[in-house]
Length: 181
Image (cartoon, rainbow, N blue to C red):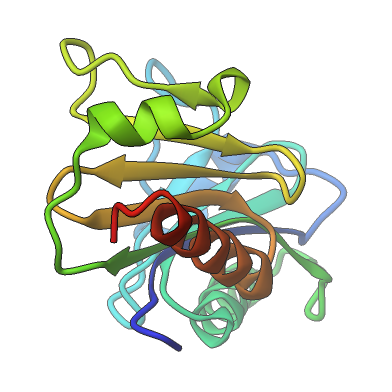
């Protein structure tokens, strides 16, 4: 994986046509519900360590996974809990990846000021008094890179690991051509 590490996957699945949230909370004690904060319920399985948000629309959103298998296991666990209390759900929903966040470390200090001048200005936001990193928007592949002076790079907004990896590899090439690495 070229030193690229998955930090988080956010994915969703339509597991029902809709839920009566109060009914779910009443029947499943592990579901957390605070309607003042969030209109859905939260479920935190022990393994894998993810968080599932269940919306009244019947959509389940999984966050915190570091691979697609963890997403699948988490969605399966939540659907089994719901089925076990007699509520019908889709047991084989299509899972859609919404965001994959990856990181890498170049193991080299970076001069963000000179990098910001070397990259295309319309895609760069570097305001060190507001955020300690350079934000580089790669519109062509739909990812955003956060580049830090420590040499750490975080890629967000990718729909696939391939897109995230491509974003990291492309910025490495650009940094190399600028003489930054």
